[in-house]
Image (tube, rainbow over all chains, first blue to last red; front, side):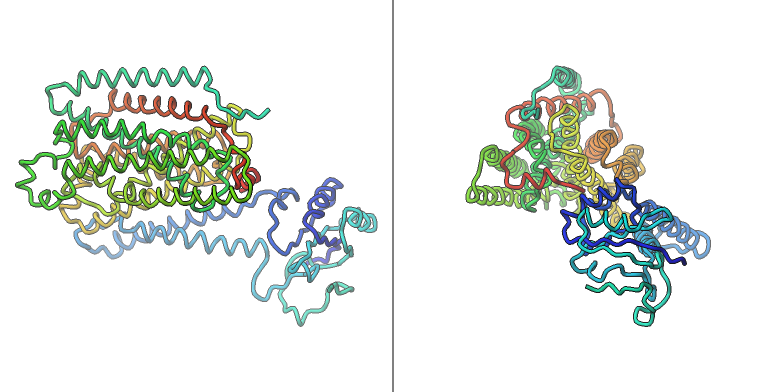
Length: 194
Length: 406
C-alpha cells in the first residue's frame, strides 16, 4: 500500500466538467477517478473508460449455477437416492427447471455483487480515502494521479484554467485498508472540508 | 439532406413482385391441387395452411398496433424516431383481417370439420364435452365475435394513425396536451379491447378450438407473446432496411438496442409461458391434458417441437444477450428473420397436429403462402410508408427520442 500523490480539481457544474474532462484527456493526464454526487450520463465515455467486464463474469457465474443445479439434482435423483415420484422418470428435467433457474440467478447475482465489491474495493470495515466531503453532495471531484514526470504546479494551474473552482494536492492511499474512519489518522495534511 | 419521405426503390419493388408472384401462383396451384382435391387430407392441408398463415400474420401485424398503444399509454418517447414504421405495419391489420375472414368463411361455411371438429353438428350432439362448450364454440358466435374484433382493431388503428398525422404540423402547448390526451384515450381503448381479444378469446376461438376437447389457460398469452416477439422483429427489420437506405436519420444504435431488448426479453417471456403451460400438464399427467403434447413431443411433430424451442429460446437467449449484439445491424437482422420463422413454425405446430394429425407436410404450399404473406407485407408497408413523412417532427416527445441514449 503505497501512498500516492493526487491533484484534485472540484467542479460545480456538469456543463463545465465535460469540456474539462475532454481537455484533461487531450493534455495526456491520467484520471484516478471522477467522484460525482449522482450518476452522470456519458461521463464514462468522455473519460475513455473501457466497458466493464462485469456482465461476462455474471454470465460465467450463471453457467456455474446452471451446472451446479443440474449435476447436483441428477446425482441426487438418479444415483444417490432414486425415488419414484408419480411414475415420473428419475431424470425429470422439466421438474428441475425452476430450481435450475433459481440457482442460475442466485449464482449470477451473488457472484456479480461480490465481484463488484471487489473491483470497487467496498466492504464493511474497509476504509477509502475521501478526496472531498462535498463529492456526495453537490460537487464533481476530478482526481488526477501524479506520476514521476507530472509537473504538479502546471497541472494545478491547468485545472484552474479549465474551470475547476478549487484545486489542491493530496497524498493518499489509492487502495483500501482495514480501519474505522474515526480512529484513523488523517492521511493528508490539509483537511479538505468545505 | 434528410430524406423525409420513403420512396420505393426498384430493388424493393422487384422483390415484392417476385414474392407476390410466387406466392400468388402457389395459392392458385394449392387451390387447384389441394383445395379442390377429392382427398380429405389434401383439402385439410389447404385450409390448415391458410389458417396458420393468415392468423399468424394478422396477429404479427397487430402486434405493431399493440406496441404503438402500449408505448403511448406508458408515455414513452424513445420510439418516436421510428414510430411511423410500426404505424405503417399496423395499417395492414384491415387487409390481413379481410384475408383471415375469407379463410374463416371458407372453413366455417365450407363446413371443414377436419379443421374445427366442433363444426360437425352430429358429432357435437354425442359429445358431452363439446356439447358443454356449444355456447362458445358455434359458427354464429365465432363469426360475429371475429368480425367485431376485426372491425374494432381496424377502426382504432385508423384512428391512431390519423391522430399521428397531426404531429406533422406545429402544435402549441394547449394543442399538444389535447393531442397526448386523445392518443392516450384511443390507446387505452385498444389495449382493453386487445386484452378481450388477443389476450383471451381470439386465440381460444381461432387456434385452441382446433383441439376442442383440450384447453389451457396459458394459451392466449402464449399466442400473444409468440406474435408480439415476431411483430417486434418485423418492426426491427423495417427499421434496419430504412436505416440502411439512408432514411430515419434520428434512429441510432440506441434505438436498435431497445428493439433488440424487446426481441430478447419477449423470447425469454415466450419460453416462460411455454414452460408454464407445459410443466403443469407434464406434472399432473392427466390423459385429457397430456393428449395435446402426445403428438407434439412423442409423435410425428417431435422434430418441429424441439426445433421450436431451440430457435425461439436458446438461439435468441445466447446470441442476443450481449450489448454489442443488440447494437449490431447484422445480428439483429439475422435474428429477426430467425425469430419470425421460428414463431411461424410455432403456429405451425399449434395448428397442424389437431388438423393434419400424422399426415402433415411442410413443403411447397406452406412456404408458398409464407412467401405470399411476405410479399403482401412488403407491398402494403412500403405503400403506407410513402404516404407520410417518416419523422413526426412536431410530436411533443420527439426530442426525447432524438437524444435517446442507452
